[in-house]
Image 1 (cartoon, rainbow, N blue to C red):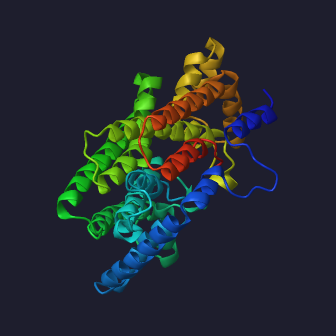
Image 2 (image 1 turned 90 degrees about the vertical axis):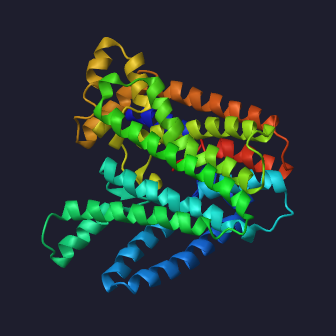
Length: 384
C-alpha cells in the first residue's frame, strides 16, 4: 500500500478543509461554550495563582515547582471534560441557573485531567504533549541545565509524579469551592470519586496490556477505552453535571447520559488510536507511531492482528521492536492493509449513532441536545 493511501485513511478520520486551522471539536466548543471555556480558564488562573503564591512561601524552589504544575494545567487543551459536565448540567437546568456557582466544579475536572496526563506521559515515556516537552522531560532538562547531581531522567519522573499528585489535590480543593448545598455536593463527590477510581482502573489495564500483550484481545482493549477514556472524558463528566443539577441516580436521564457517554467516550478513544498512528504531530502535539514503537495493544492493533493473514501477522509481531521512522511507516501501512483502519472507522460511526439514539430518548434542554449532538460527531472527527 502506498504512503498516500495510508494518509487517506487518516484523513477519513478527520477530513482537513482548505485553510482550516481548528479541528471540529474546537469549532463546536467555540460555537456553544465560549462563556464556559473563558469561565473555566479564569477560574483556574485565579485559583492557581493563589496556590502558587502559597507554596512559594514554603521555599523559593517550591514556587518554581508549583509554577510547573500550573503551566501543565494552563498549557492549552480543549476543556472537553468541563464541557461535557457543563452540558450534563445545562441539559437539566436550562439557561436559568447562574454559571459561576458551579464553575469551580467544572474547572476541577481540568485539574483531574492534568493529573492523569502527567502520570500517563511518565508511564508511556512520551516526549511531547500539546506540542511541548512533557513534564518529566522538561524537569529532566532543568536538572541538566542546573548541574544537579544524580540521574536527570529519574529526577524528571519523580518531579512529574509529584506534579500529578499536586494537581489531584488541587482538584479536590477547587471542587469544594462550588456553591452547592452540602447534601448535593456530597452526592457530586461520590460521582467524582467513582470517576477517579475508574480512571485508575483503566490506566492500570493500559499498563498491563503493554506488559502482557499475548493475553490481550480486542475486547480487553475496548475495556481499557471504556475505563481509561470513556468514563472520565464523557460519561462521568455528564453524570457529574447532572448530579450538580440535583438529578437522582435512578432518574431516566442518568441512563440516557450513561449510554451516550460510553458510546462517545469509546469512539473518542478509537479516534485517538487512529491519530496515534496516522495523525500529524504538528496538529496532535504528540509523535506519530508511538503506539507501534511500544506495541501498545490498542483496539486498532488488536484488530489488525485478528484480521491479518499469517504473513501479515508475522510482520505485525515487530510492533514494539521498531524505532526508525521508516519501519514505523511500514507497520502503519501494514495495519491499514489488514482492514483494521476501516473496521475501526465503522466502530466509531456505530458508536456515534448509538450515542445519538440515546440522546433522542432524553428529556433535556434543547440547546443542550443540539450541543451534545454536535459534540458526539466532532469529538470523533478530529485531527488532534
